[in-house]
Amino acid sequence: MMERKSGILMHITSLSSPYGIGTFGKEAYDFVDFLVSSSQKYWQVLPMGPTGAGDSPYQSLSSFAGNPYFIDLDFLNKEGILKKSSYDNLDFGSDPEKIDYGKIFINKMKVLRTAYENTGDKYNEDMKVFKENNKIWLEDYAMYMALKSEFALKPWKEWDRSIKLREKSAVEYYRVKLNDEINYWIFIQYVFLKQWTALKNYANERGIKIIGDIPMYAAEDSADTWANSEVFMLDGNKNPLLVSGCPPDAFSSTGQLWGNPVYNWGYLENTGYKWWIDRMRKNVELYDVVRIDHFRGFESFWEVPCGNDTAVDGKWVQGPGMKFFHKLKSKLGNVDIIAEDLGYLTEDVKKFRAESGYPGMKVLEFAFNFNEDSDYLPHNHIKNCVVYIGTHDNEPIMGWLQNVKKDDADFAKKYLRLSHEEGYNWGFIRGVMASVAKLAIVQMQDYIGLGNESRMNTPATIGGNWCWRIKKDCLTGKLAHKIRDIVKLYRR
Image 1 (spheres, rainbow, N blue to C red):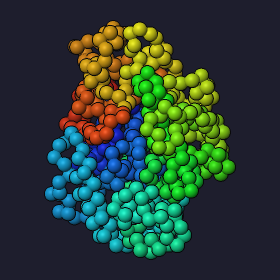
Image 2 (cartoon, rainbow, N blue to C red):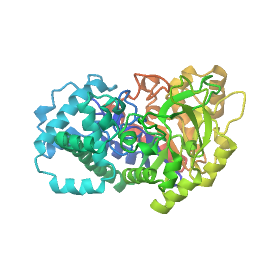
Image 3 (cartoon, rainbow, N blue to C red):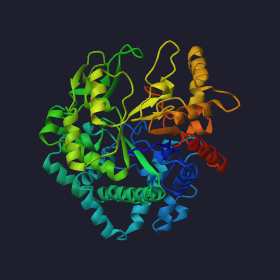
Image 4 (cartoon, rainbow, N blue to C red):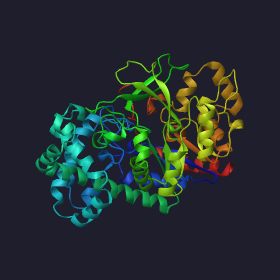
């Protein structure tokens, strides 16, 4: 991947838009232009899969499909399959800085269905090619979404037993019964990929690479677990036997119980890791660089018996280790990967990450403990890493400074020579830019100097996350010039 460069982290949802949520529309292209004018080389986004209840991009309905919310309606209007009047006066939410997912779910999906009904045979030839290129996942996903509608949006484990277990006769019955609905969901994926590919090409042609993000685990209620249940540790009724989490630590006496089904790595190894390699192939198509969340799970992972209320009674189990990545390289060649290796790491995990050769991550917000040294302090960084002030799970830096212990805040102020005159956020930006790390990534919120009102996610909380949107007038020429100056100063 990497020469000495920098980039900005902002998810698609956070882009400005007249229609309640960021899309692949004009504002996305404007953001690429802003990246260019501010001398950036990378745009990092969060997972782009379709989201379910909770709206988390890390709990997607599919590891392969794209989020319909990102489809731009004005582009469909220009293609002649959507009248402006069919969406111009709909209520997509009234707050320009916050997403109302309930209104998006109801009104945007209604408009996309209108677009599908207006399409006729306009894309027939392109759709044939699209179906062929994506056949390993597309029909299963489209049927899963059609069945979701058929069964009142219930999780698939609550569907009728015959289709829950994918009995052949039931699959054939619903394939016929739900044919039009299945074709609708295929159309949605076709449009998603068409619009994203155009945007990515626009970015790449201007020297901007896209960093994507994939969760380690698939959601329990997903097309993946329904259609590929053998990949996961499920029983004969397709209920999880073991689920994911992490053990008790200084932050939580009961650990964290994530609840995703863990992988059946024995089955995956016996099949040449096909499902995972197919997944990576799809992500390599979508992105230039792939950040793997919870990378340590490939070395060892914490599994908990399903039904437990906490993660206390789990245990560490060996993952596939380098066997998987050797197979990945043999199938896909060299893939640019960022290994999310945050948190408590054993020596074995550190050796594994080093052996992989992939850059790990350093987060400045984790660096400033007044009482001890830290690998996250800039003087301890190595070149083969990616440095952040904070990620989507952290407070924006102005919020962090308000809430952190006074001794730690004072340590940060002294270490980074922070001042009101410069702006504390800009002092932290200097800190990541000056690091020896090959790549420095800054959240857009930190360039603007926003507080916790703009936080993307507070882990282990439900509701109010993933909602922040940037105000339309924030991406100014003045800000681009200021970023460009600091990039030039630190030779990024």
